[in-house]
Amino acid sequence: MTTLSDHVDPGVEKLEDPVVLLGSGDQFTDRDRTRMAFVEKELDRVVGRGPGPYYDSVVIAGAGFTASVMAARLARSEHFHGKVVLAGPRTTESRRVKDGLTLRGRGVDYICHALGVPQNAYVAALYGDIIDGRGVGTGNVAAMGTRNPDGSYRLSRVAPWQGGARGYSRPLFFGARNSRMQGALYELMERSGVIEVPEPITCLEEGYALAPGRRPLLVNAGHNQRLFNPSVPRVDWATVAVQAPLRPTASGLQNCPSNSALLAPVRRGNRIDVGLFNPYGDPLSPRSTYYGIIVSDVHPDRAGFDKQRELAEISEELIGIAGAMGLEVDDHDETWFQGLVPGSPWTPVVSRPGTLELQMLAHPGKSATFSDGMTSGATTAVAAAEAILRGADPDAAARRITRVIARDRSIWHFLRTRVAVPADALIRVLPEAALGYPHTLHAKSQWATRA
Image (cartoon, rainbow, N blue to C red; front, side):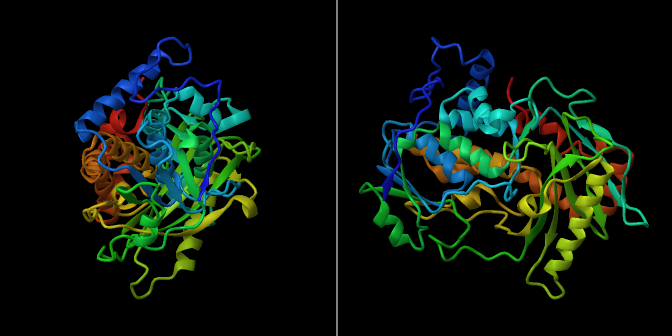
């Protein structure tokens, strides 16, 4: 085991534990205080109160985004400082846009709570020397994408469904690489409070062997769903996804305000592929101003499934819709990602005593279809960590905080796969009505920052 060296930016005002905003500094704004108060109120609702920590240490299998948020919150507490283990290789930063790229404003609120820093500190760490507003979105517009006979794509009527024509006065989302978001976390977290083990855990016994205490909680935040519980049911669904950062062509951005994301689904038969094109910022790809992702539901174990054909079709959709927006892929060979993302049970199994199935609780059902992966990961990680600190049930807290977003994801899945034809027609004619539920009605609680 290797204990990470202490790394705390002296220029960033931190929060003490328990969370009490420091009133003497000028880096926490009134908006930060509003956001923190909202997070605390929501945590009180989903976690409740308790007698204090039962566990004396936490071992987290996996070192991805969700795991890192949980570690950040626990590491700055007096009880768990130096008693949190992150087991597994950290994500390496590169220009390739693997994993999620959109973090809703609500997710940033929870990350800042986990770190104990104001929003500007995290955003500055996230974007570095390109902190010029790129990557920050304040609105959402939508249109259906259609393939022309010549292979190009066109968009139906583009209309706003969140933020109106000008956007909200607060961020709805931030677009950046998943690996950069994790990098920003590590730059700001209490790293002296975390023990990093580069080798992954392969069984329950290895987790207990790594524990720095006698009464540890083992947290599964990795992709092996049966690591701590072999009885977790297998699912036959997954998603295929392609994504890439985009740069403007000579024609410039079209069909979308520069501060908004474009939801551009494409119907293929009786299902709708999800197309999302978001403002994007990456210090390693300074020419990129947007990114695009196309995701489709698949059943890999069923007869007739052809992974390469699916990837080829959605790749054509991404490039075609990007062209209709006046965008093109930025350095395809270095940045493009495509692959298959395994699904999880829509209703996660109950965690066994002494363990927590964080990954399944944070990401139920089919992934990457609702622009919610990192947001649900951040909120679930913070709620579970807070339950551990308070001596409450982290499994129950995780289920409560993901209840609305999991329900909305399942409704969106139903619209895309069960009523694709009428949903396609309605989005073409009246996008703001078609996306009224589950999207727009939950804008304040699920998308935007609090102030």
